[in-house]
Length: 434
Image 1: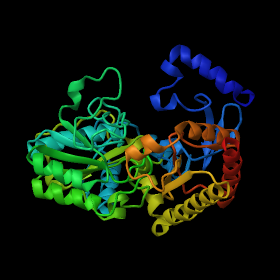
Image 2 (image 1 turned 120 degrees about the horizontal axis):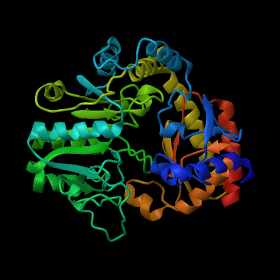
Image 3 (image 1 turned 30 degrees about the vertical axis):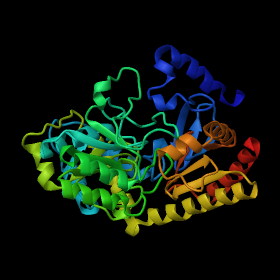
């Protein structure tokens, strides 16, 4: 642990004043322990001990353009010298909203907040007001925030005998009351027949179907052919609303997000992370006939909504994403694709059961004999998570930082040389856990 001595000392100090030594529970399990960082630029991250890492965590996804992007920092620096918070409107929020409306298929109007978790709450409130119904359909393994009424079915305990039919989801933490699950029904993802059966039985009760456009947090699972289109058809038929949670996929899979990539337009969609290049900003976008209810009888408030810093960051980030007809996406497609192919080749050569799946900007690694992970249960029942944790620690020792649940994010700042360096480290790390 000598290489992380200063981090360890800070961690010991932190545990005396911060529960678990961290400010987000997802950081507690970071091997070897929660590290402390000092600076970051591009695809590189430096810890307080001076160790440098090629970063594939990217702030848990926001840094699609890389850390400390000069255009974003310059825009924020200039804007905040005019003020930070007006308790009123600014030109920037109109301009950013106009950009989102122009780029995102479902976006006819936009509301801004600070986090994806918050905007999911606004989505559910709006859907219930519009439909007059209360039931919301969820999918196993999908993450929609940490609030009581959505931290449900995210990582449920399942066995091979767990029923696949719709049921109330499991709570995930102490302090949740069982009643928060009363208005939610959870199903395995990518099984349209099960959703059709549920609608046939209870479609008149369903206000909203809530789904990630691509299951990023668990397995980087793409929607099965026709699955999202099937959700769209069922919602239209039964008068329910369709919500795509694009907090991760929005502006990462392309300028039009997962809905553009997969050709399905929801009624409502939530965005965050990549839209502000590392600054806190989030949005709910949707059809005007529904979104106008926020100006009528549906409350959505927030002191820091559309603050100058967040709006300036989003304005600059979206401009960079659009530059040269989306050149950053072509770069990420190329380097991310090379990284995926390279890891597959190494695993095959070493005869290790390492599955690489997803898209170049967000892919997943898991030790499994499965040829593909198609839903949460595949990941929960058939992947060797302990081995992957050992692998992430071996990578960290070799200057590569990844998230221990398997998702790898690639940025526009990653270079060919860094991809080559990463592949060399992957081979060494895989040999160490073989």
